Length: 316
Image (cartoon, rainbow, N blue to C red; front, side, top):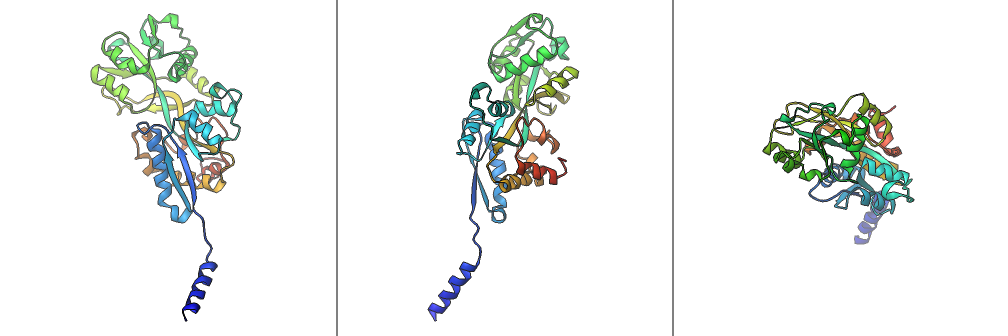
């Protein structure tokens, strides 16, 4: 009798299809940054449906954008978060990837903007980029991401360093102290917002944020695929009573072209289907929209992501 029951049990077990769990890993950045909680938020959303999808997601703290692109290329990560300019350079074999183009790199979606902030003393009288002539500004250190973007913005706006009374070249982390000590009228910095840097400045001195927009900026965004427009919410910083348009890079979720289309589709659809809940997971997501998830994609999009965006009516 026992043999009969066992035989039936084995037969039943063998007749039921077995679906192997698929494991995916998202590379992020340091645990104190914004990339790590972003990867964690995506994985939590994915893991809620793992019994249905058969996909289990884990997050890994990494060295950031360049590391993630290289490690995805090596097949050691399935997904990673990267600045859009780093992804662009990786795909095209430029900058730190010179001679080592990652042609298999693919975008999934652009998550949130890391926008250029132009922080000024309210008493400086600077209301627009046109007002900086004769002013003392910190433009960040040569070679930094902030400096690269600042130089491009100033050049596009017809402003030369010689037009400034002072063009200081210290890190943007020094900006709040220099502003407090009245050594500068304003400083530039590329940040995910809100940031402790500007909060620190606003707690020491009355500040304002200067809009970075206009026809020259529109042409800039059209020229450089890795830049995107965004808005810094006025609610983020004390004393700033308006939303501030700007441009910057995007934090982009990237993968490789050989990752299973169904996995990329499922991940993308999960974010789109739970977008309102996703937006509440971090202050940096406050101003994003479903449409903005497609802005600043500097490398081709994975076909699984394209399928999900088309189903959502966001791509034709």
